Length: 184
Ligand code: PRP
Ligand code: MN
Ligand code: MG
Image (tube, protein in one colour):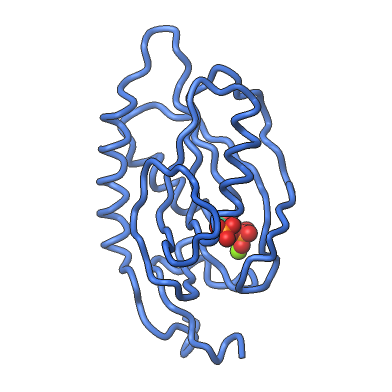
């Protein structure tokens, strides 16, 4: 599949799955079982990139979770951030009083998440934390408070496991670097 487009495998499918299991254990230990009468932990996934990570994370978490999605976009089809954040789809319900965990595939410049954190914070959740599978420390333009990070990666353009280039490659089960010939 995608012959010649992937220059190298940065994180294998097995490494991703092991990390998700580890993150799930840490998150479950931090939150604990909901107390009687308390609502379930609410996972807010950021479409579309976070879908693969969110579904695997929810299945690994030994806690009841509810799933909500928001679609915001800062990139379009370019490989670098435009700095413009648009809401494409809002949450379906109120999150006030809920324990909310934002689920992201990657924090690159931090623009998307920093905007989203402020936006959701203003809706009055009981708590608001962030889990991201990937983070690029060298690309950060804004410092965002993130509780759980899967992997810190170099500042290279990566695809797979939800991450796209022009909407392609999200279906790869691993994270790979894209051959420059693809976007040349
Ligand atoms: C990508 C990625 C993160 C965001 C990170 O989403 O999934 O949401 O960019 O970049 P930032 O830290 O520089 O803001 P994108 O806007 O490409 O939409 P997508 O998830 O639908 O691919
Ligand atoms: Mn995204
Ligand atoms: Mg994208």
